[in-house]
Image 1 (spheres, rainbow, N blue to C red):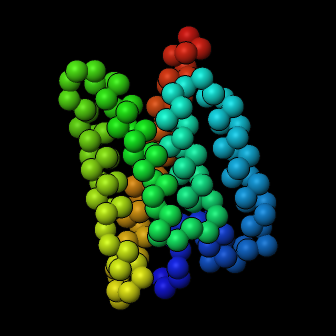
Image 2 (image 1 turned 135 degrees about the vertical axis):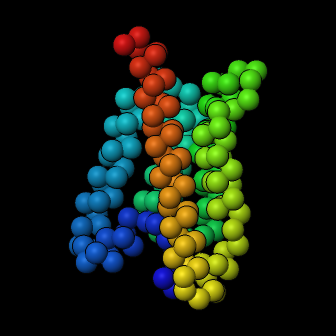
Image 3 (image 1 turned 45 degrees about the horizontal axis):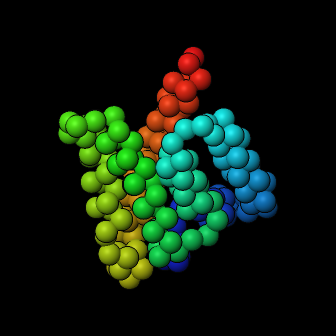
Length: 152
């Protein structure tokens, strides 16, 4: 991995030999986000911001410098965890997710750009892994909050 971006739909499709489907994948990715936002429109906006930032970060080409988008899901997880905890401590799994996400985001970009194998691959995988965990957490939190709001 010596390319200047990671984790976007276009790059994954190009590597799979499916670059002719990039427009379709973009439309599908953004349509899924739009439908999901409509479904959970009454939940805490930070949950929606977090998911939207993750979708934006993984949708089109972004360089390592665009990883600042991940601050929105991190803040959303923190806010949601604090709301659940009340006056008590944050749940251990949420705390591990937050610390792990912050740790991988703080790794120097030189691991990706300049170091030899296996560092670029490990760098990319660690980011994608924590982005996926953040996405899962936020989607589940929003769906639960939406269910509570609807009273179902």
